Length: 186
Image (cartoon, rainbow, N blue to C red; front, side, top):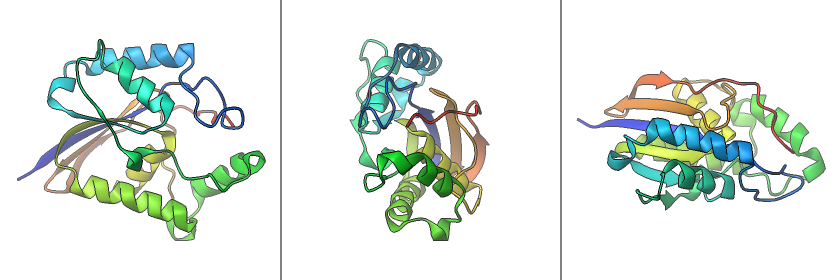
């Protein structure tokens, strides 16, 4: 019998928009958000595997949450934000709005592959994890486990925690992070 507890932490507020910087770190507010989230999780970190998206804002969120670098973490590219490198920066907001509500079967191939890699990880995950990641990653996983046919499910706030509990590969409990109508900086 295997049980897993997966805590998905959305990164703190970024210091710049997509259109301004391809990989911004955290803003001052984002650093405070990560610090607060870390205080809530510090007692669990010793017994959880720590993973982070390779994007700077997710890495910085994990580094701040680990308080004094007590616990090692690994970068995992499966948790990177939704692939959009081939989308014109001036059209990203419109593209993302369409992607957010499109039926899964109508998603671009690169997005379906990204989603599939996340789902494969979730199905194979054994043990407990804390993962710093992105808005769309959290939505992709939650929409999958709730059988939603769109990638969107809710609006996780910066540095909020979404918790997934599984037993023998089956969902036993889902706790959504703070839901906030987030402005996605473009």
